Length: 137
Length: 277
Image (tube, rainbow over all chains, first blue to last red; front, side):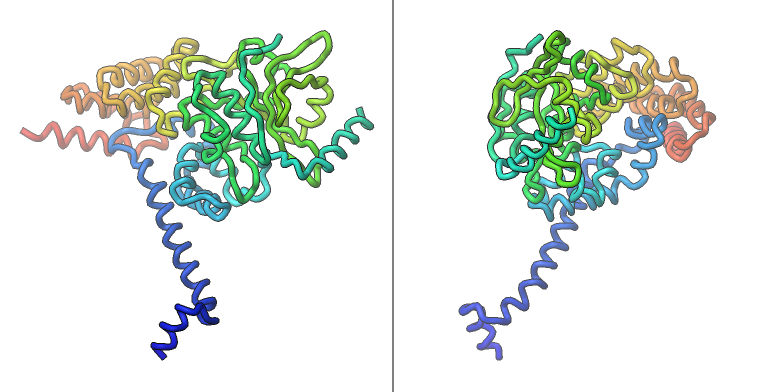
């Protein structure tokens, strides 16, 4: 049996495909955990001081709601950015540059929010848009 | 009115986000910004595009103030008139099948009712106001500025400016945040978040005397702000002025409010420090 497995790895047999999803989910779990660690680090406030974000949230209800869930949402958004093609470090760096309110808006909506692109392959759609503008103006 | 000095960065494929940012970053003095250098900061491969929040985030990461404008053409034109190019988000196709696109407005002609735009592969386009507004409406007339930290928007509103600068601080660009807080305090000397933010940045940059001064100004202008008293007490304790620190911390606790757990902790820490021989 053991021999078969060893030989199997060398020749890439069927069972390597079966193992693939498990190792992938393990890698994904580890990278998610890594993202959480990377995100947690810059937000350790020094004892005794109250951060500016709390002062902002005292004046804005929207910011107050966002700050409550910020750590969870940040890990969530970083995980989604990773699944859309970023490395754990890049995802963490990007999330660190966002406000709590922005993170709250992104959480769970990264797939549907506008992503400015204008690929040239979409020229036909754009021409339709221009045509409609021409007709309604 | 045309900002001819704003350079053009040509967009290839899906990179209108990085290209638009490169143009406004160059105009704000970050001459090293290019489409190539900004793509890893803002482009999202899985969406083949760039999200609005990340356009703002990338702006902070290069040390500029990211300022979303009020949804009005008038505000965009006022910013351009003041010398700042504006990034706008457009939907070029249909509501159901959107094709989102960023472009940079660099000028306008009120008589011809046209804006001058750098967009995609075209360095200079003239669009009528109605053409722009039609394609702009579905983004909720979204637009943004990237400003050097010492400059305020021409259309600046205090709550929006303090939020934008606090975001720069949170993104870790402390030196730039300090400059931006000073600029906003020159306009609104009693801004509570401006003063607390400046104090927190000075503290993080280890200028305790300046931090104490900022928190003192905050507590004098806003005697109801427990945060101002709490942070001032903490800094006074580090400076070794324990009697003053205790009095200020007691005021912070007496003000109550949502930061009461923190203010109590600060007072306890100061009392423990005073008991030490």
